[in-house]
Amino acid sequence: MAVTLTSYLFQQKGELPHVTDELVLLLNEIAAATKEIAGKVRKAGLLGVLGSAGKVNVQGEEVQKLDELANEILLESLKSCGKACQITSEEVEDCLVVSESGYAVAFDPLDGSSNIDVNVSIGTIFSVHKDSVMKPGREQLAAGYVIYGPSTMMVLTLGNGVVAFTLDPESGNYLLSHPEVKLPEKGKIYSINEANRDKWTSDGLRRFIDFLKGEKYTLRYVGSMVADVHRTLFKGGVFIYPADRKNTSGKLRLLYEASPMAFLVEQAGGLASTGEKPILDVVPEKLHQRVPVILGSRWEVEKCLEFMREG
Ligand code: AHM
Ligand code: MG
Image 1 (cartoon, rainbow, N blue to C red):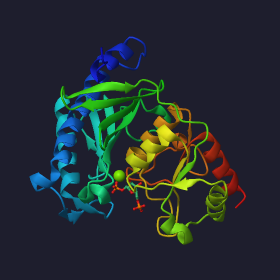
Image 2 (image 1 turned 90 degrees about the vertical axis):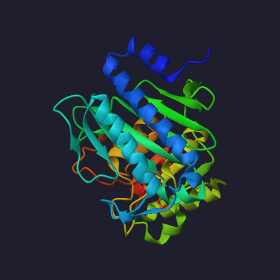
Image 3 (image 1 turned 180 degrees about the vertical axis):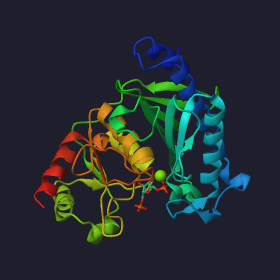
């Protein structure tokens, strides 16, 4: 019989000391919220929720109506479940402090905003720490994402490998479809916004990309981190959002984009670096801080770092 997310979590509770009843409840709550978001995403064109909400967020980026809707759904369910002591969202300037101790959750409610209106995969990313979100990624208790693609899938780590669930539209349950997600040691795909090539601050990175072309790699770039990381996790290769002259620390945010994805990638046997150190070792200084991201198969990430070190 298919294993549901809930039964998987209860099974892990017996094996991992940090997986408590409270954490199971919190993760179930996040899962329920993502099912609701998946429903809205699926019917977006019929609900009148496509397009811009007519404002910019804390990052100065245009907010889409669905960004806002997804944010509200997640905020409300985390507030009402009573297990979250801190809630940080890409769409909200300050961290919402509910209580002193409990689970600190950071999330990007709907990642890949530029793809919302054109029916291309988007997703929700989440990260769970004990007590405070301002801790290095290595201390995450759980992290994952939900990709709203042809199938809705949740990819999750509790720190003992990576598993993936597919949302069964008939039963409405997340069912375990990939009990062990392992990144290939080496892949054939690189994923980077090459339009920014002239703006990248690293010559080594330019040489690395030229090297991959010589090695007959192919390019895939969706522009939704969830989709690009999802493909990288399953097929291998490398995903990069580097520092450039405009975004001197890259574009992606540490707490709710880089760090949870880095946890998943390392747990699946890959590497995730800022170019200088493992993403999971970065100690957060600001809530919405950005970091450069190089993640994927060990071979490509190590090679990229080698090229970048040469300058
Ligand atoms: P968002 O959180 O506002 O959607 O921005 C993050 C997205 C990532 O999903 C994606 O990797 C990146 O922005 C794409 O940026 P660009 O269009 O500069 O290539
Ligand atoms: Mg995002």
